[in-house]
Amino acid sequence: VIDFPWRDFSTVTFGYSLSSPHLHTVVSTQYRDMRLTLEHVQKLGYRRIGLVLAKDHDLRTDRNYLAAYLVHEYGTEGEPPPPPLLLRAYEDAAALGEWLRRHRPDAIVGAVKDVILRNLRQLGLRLPGDLGVAFPNLGRADPRVAGVVESSTEIGAVAVDVLVAMIH
Image 1 (tube, helix red, strand yellow):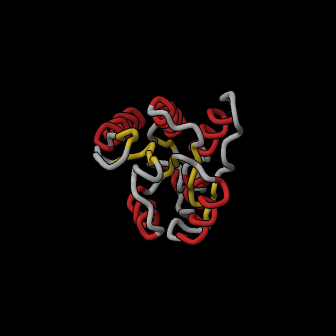
Image 2 (cartoon, one colour; image 1 turned 90 degrees about the vertical axis):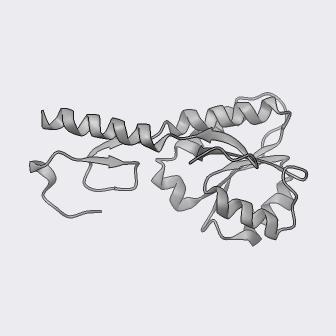
């Protein structure tokens, strides 16, 4: 929340982190990026795909990743998918480990790549040997994981275009 009289200014935000005031927003196509990630993971042969998100990150992305996961996974025939894991904090390796033991996904999708990969290594998992991992929001290509590479340069250019249009 930012308390400021924004009515007299042209403003654009990046993402959904700002809950108040409601301003023009530019963001990646989070819902579609998650759907593409899930489709790719399935094409690689994975069937029990789980979702790992932190609760606050879920809210800051307007629940787009969770919505795409639920629509995709519960719309797929076969065995029901693992329930999504919504962590209090991404660093909660113990909760991740318990969820993995209980629900036994063969792959996971999530956000905040570096923390999730560190947690999985801390749990002693070999990637991709023990578990497939993919992310819908990679900042750049990473040969260790699959996912969608977001172009922050293009997102920034769109934000500038929106701002210039507002000023005009």
